[in-house]
Length: 115
Image (cartoon, rainbow, N blue to C red):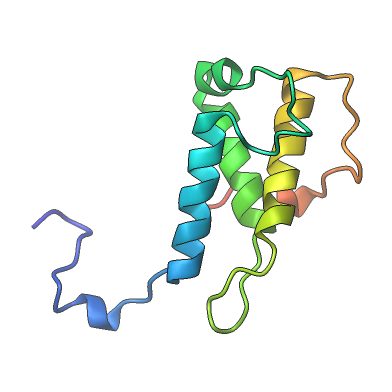
């Protein structure tokens, strides 16, 4: 077993992202990679090369998405669309600096988690 992994019997004692959160993350990654993330806001913006050029760009997209994402007490995602829009706004501004993000990003939206 690799360090940091758990056996099936250990999983019962570990907290896990809800199925709804995992599905939201999966669809967000799919739309992002497929070029269909908020098609209205990103229409005509070829953002995929910009995201892949430097890892920190893609890292910020996921940071904003997960910082904005809200989950209720049962683990159900309650604002997936809002989280996607905020991430799309950041992408649009990154690719087109003349685009004005409204409302402007708050520090908590762009704060990186972890060490």
